[in-house]
Length: 556
Ligand code: TEU
Image (cartoon, rainbow, N blue to C red; front, side, top):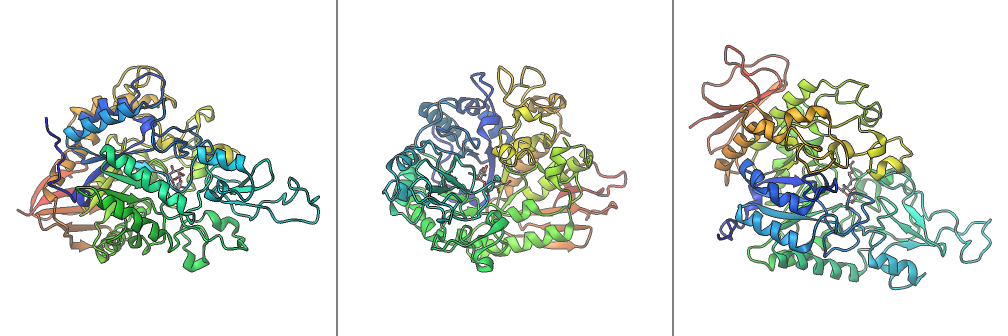
């Protein structure tokens, strides 16, 4: 059978539904409790039937797993616990036969401390070419320092704080410090060193030559840094990804020089036929995202404004407008995302008051405050119809098609997110959205694999497993399947026209004939006299749209 993905639709990513597979938690083929490449291949036909266009695979490279694989020890291989390159090639071939494209996760801001480069840097010592690939500095020489090489600079070079807590500097045996904006096992690369750029061009080509359709670029907004001495004190601002350098001349985030890197990558992506795509993970200030998707840079950037929006008609409508405006200002396509492997799953976010401190909510095992789960799921289903009705690409996170909520009561002994240890047990971190998927209602890990999973699944997931929802037309899985099927008819249509906007609800139409109405308010609202084709919940007896519900209607 020929590949179902051909060159015909070379700009497929402009209005795709892209499904994030968190590899460790998707499907375990060999029974070691961790999801793997072969497991994904087995489940691909189900994803294809769901109606997605592409999968994004989180990192599967050899890794000590200090940060779930975002600590890469070798960029051109597969971690043995997850499979082999042959397994990867088989996955890619199956996906392409099914018409599903494959995007892989590239982690260019930092390597693992077990990467050959970092081991060589530690061994080679001060001032070496090996250290110059990373960011090694001496601490300031203080009055109490004895002056010998090991004694100099007992304090880190700056007060910078890492994303997972603690100092962003770790000391090596000879007394020098290296920078890591994430865990100590994730030393940051120095992107001003041309050797780093050359290496990543080769890594891009390695995966492109294997046939991947694109890349998700991790921490795209952090790769270029201003390391001019003296390095400034930043306090807690070092982790604040929302502060752009124009506000604070921030040395770490969203600097202009990063765009030169992406211009170079774009040339590599364009060497292939059809040209391949890349999507940036860039947590930047509103208005700054478009810079990453200019015509000679990357193709898309995740819309975290949409993900962070409260459940509120005016706020959502405003973000939709600015997102559309921003993308079109540079000729890019907009993107939408509600959840990913770093954030509280949206059925839980929408079940909590907007100002809830989710770190303490997780610490209370989800008991304080108690989330209104039925409300959260209702809103999540409405949000899905909203997202899938918008022009551009929708990035789905595994499990949202099942309506999975955050697992807030994971026992601490199972937690693996480095945030838990680095915060000295003050922040449970992100494992609550990474619990392995329930595929079946029975079995030691609900069909995830033949043994128990690396985090046990809540018992109540048996009732909402994939197999339990598959034949139920009122299930969340069926809602996603129906919406994704109808969404295909919107391909190529970049239009959006507001029909109505008020404090409680809004409606918009697409020129291909779809009308989407979303009710965020407390009262049911009347629907226009059009054919209703899909709703996220039951209409009232009089045919009105209840609170926290969305409907799709057809004008033609
Ligand atoms: O996340 C980048 C990032 O900025 C994170 O700090 C994110 O904002 C945070 O997790 C939200 O709670 C990427 C990956 O998506 C994440 O899983 C990795 O841990 C991180 O990079 C380091 O590679």
